[in-house]
Image (cartoon, rainbow, N blue to C red; front, side, top):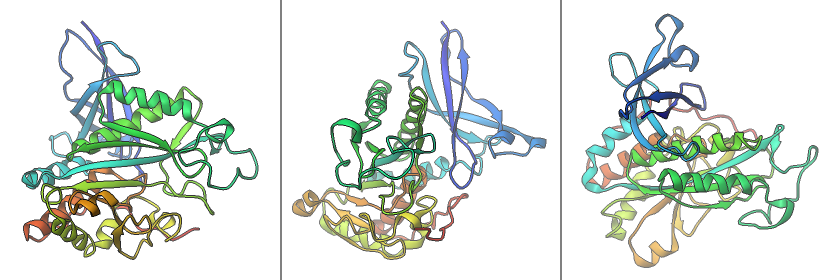
Length: 352
């Protein structure tokens, strides 16, 4: 028996890494094994020493090809089998293992924007659509472009066995969201990346592209985020643990913000349901705070918290590792390890 395995990996493009993939035909029913690729074509190696290694870490059914075909998400390694400098999953895995007894879990709300012909999907060729207001969770007519892609993507995630929790239209026309969770690290990152790959691949069939840009359109339009819901065993049992986590996050504002995605200053302006990028706050039901405590958590005095700062283009491995490092070390009464990824995104000048 032969089947197709689509090997997927994250490349070294800066400031926003791209997803890459290629197909391997696997014969005799064997399991997917390590493979390789030309790193000089993906910003991960020089041409004089171009070989990089693909190590399978997450396998799921291929919902597009069907049958026995699979998707294979990989970590990138050097030829000595050590993590490649662009491999952020390896560090997330180590931190997750260190604090496994704390049971840190995540749910990520992945926003994105469809584009076509250089404009958000559904926008007029010139000028602007009706101002924001009717699009969020809207229905009907020309104001909800992209729903056909969203429906196919949602079913694909279900067929792949991903932990998709829901979808909704977002505040700007052409902007949507899907949610993945609740999962530990690095599994949350694995499934976000595979969900992103499926979205890109399905949009191809509709002549559209997907942008995860933090501020896809300048001006009085919402940016795109990846609100990250986080809990530990302690927060699920105690309000004091939630307070400890929030206070700890407030001591490491720049470590988080500078690694929460490219263009974060363009999005975290204090407008459009965001807190300013250089100020930290937390509060009940406050979508203008850095950390929102959901009303149900506030009422129960236990549960989870929502970090509203990560961009749509954030690396989920980096975000989950940073949150584990900052909060679990505080809960344990330890110092954080000062997790600094190799490709820390620089804070960029405000352009809007």
